[in-house]
Amino acid sequence: MRNWFFEQMAMYSAYHRDTRNQVTHHIGVPLIVFSLLVLAAQLPVAEFTIGTLTLAGVLLSILLVVYIIAVPMIGIIATFVYMALLYIAEQIGPNTSPYIVFAICFIGGWVIQFIGHGFEGRKPALFDNLLQIFMAPSFLIAEVLFSLRLQDNLKNEIANRIHKYLPAEQKSL
Image 1 (cartoon, rainbow, N blue to C red):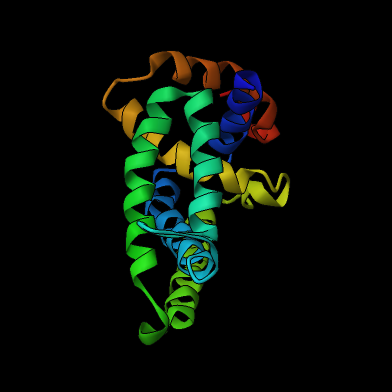
Image 2 (cartoon, rainbow, N blue to C red):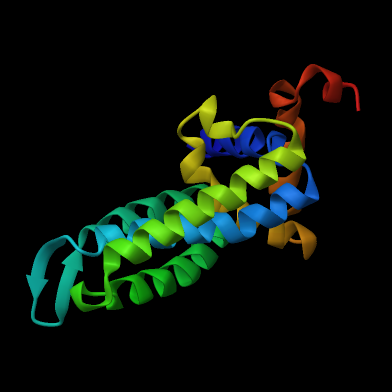
């Protein structure tokens, strides 16, 4: 699973090399994730004495387990970040127009990301591999860790795999 995860991260990295594109994704991806959590939080899965388990909680838990198994530090950080977003999303109930919040955050997040891909001059990775949608949150955390000079092994794994995902004109760089 780790090798598959590293391969997916290398592909994601190859489509997000321009700093401006990276910045737009640090805004757009959390907005999209939040919007999806708001929507899925409207669907209860189970009731417990301590609260309600929503579809958002179930789906996010599965994703976080994958992250923790693949790259524990990223998974742990993602757990804190995205559980906070889940908490906020679950506070948005019927009285606060969750579908309007969903629409604004979802559309806004995608617009911001497409602007970034305009800077990049390359289509989004998800157009070639839909699984890239799930890589975005983890890669944003990885980028922050790389800037702090952490997770050098992961950075090297990505660097060793990225060449096959670069456009021909960038492979020689």
